[in-house]
Structure formats: structure tokens, C-alpha cells
Image (cartoon, rainbow, N blue to C red; front, side):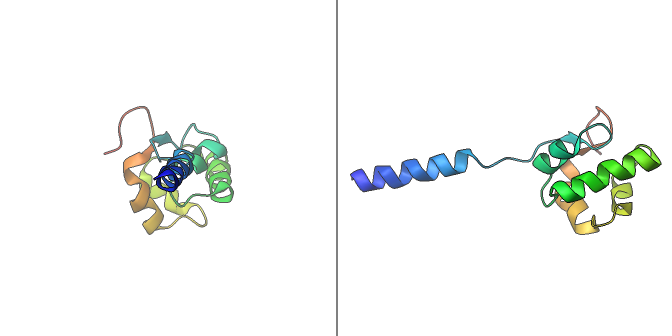
Length: 91
């Protein structure tokens, strides 16, 4: 019984460190926040998003993110519900 409790406790501890993706405004967030909140977006891709935004202005649609090197349709679909362009919920 003690081993079961130990294993269960270790599993809960490990899971507590996992980040759960949440909404992020890609027009205002920094690279660290984007990479922490969006699935499949590491720090390198998040930096590319910020760099693109700084060079070309704010994203007008979620699909505009595909203009960033390394961001494809699959990544957009995985994150569509969590990508914000303004304070209003994504449509």
C-alpha cells in the first residue's frame, strides 16, 4: 500500500508541473508566453512570431500566422481555440 501511495504521489507531482495551454494574444504576448501557452510552439518559433509581428505589424487573422516560417496549418488547427488577436475571444 505504501508503494502505491508513493507512486501516486510521484505521478501527481510530475503532472502538476505540466503546463496547460491557454489563450494568448499573439499580437501582444512576448515569445516566452507564446511558447508556454501554445502547443507545438517552442521558443524559437515563438521568437519568429514576435519578430514577424514587429516587422510586419499585428496579425489580422489566425491564418496570417502561417506566414511565419515554421508555422503550418496543423499547428494553427491545434491552437485555434487558444490564439487571440485582440482581447475578444477567437471566432
